[in-house]
Image (cartoon, rainbow, N blue to C red):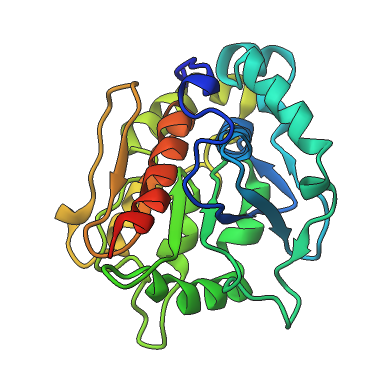
Length: 272
């Protein structure tokens, strides 16, 4: 899937942030999309934000190698400048020394923003299906409720599946009341059909014949009309009206996704 090529410096320059936010990237050990991870990371670093990563047991996360090297990178993967961002990111102390979200003492409360990157590789099921992550999100997400909430949750592509799967004791997803987007079914089907002759079911995270991401997310909502989407390859995000929750579709949205998160964070300082 083609993604927009934008210089991150045109989005935000160092020192532009009004307040220093604490941002946490919640990730599986392996398989997330490098663009959906490295672009927000780089933009947040340029804004002067404090960044941490968390994986299940504190293992340094690695993104999907198919999106970073070989013919798959050239056709479907990260752009050259994003690969450079990723190479720099993985050498950072934040990535090399992540927190462990399985630890009983771990909490999301110290963080202003929780980011859930996407990715197609089956490794991301580690976080999507984690009962511990669901527990953490059920506790944290209500703290994003407007107007009093000053926490932010942001998810892109398959990251939205984490929220769709995070349900309270009555079986209601944390995003049941929200407007949201995720990877559109037509995009998912198109890239799967285009690549299955040589990549098999790589682009179907739960295997060939499994439910499209869009359908899974819609089932978690109170009404199908809450799902918003676009097939326009340009940047597209959805900001919910009731919660400080921002969602995006795919790697092509990554720059806008990061920019809108920053705008939302900085809007808090203007609210009396």
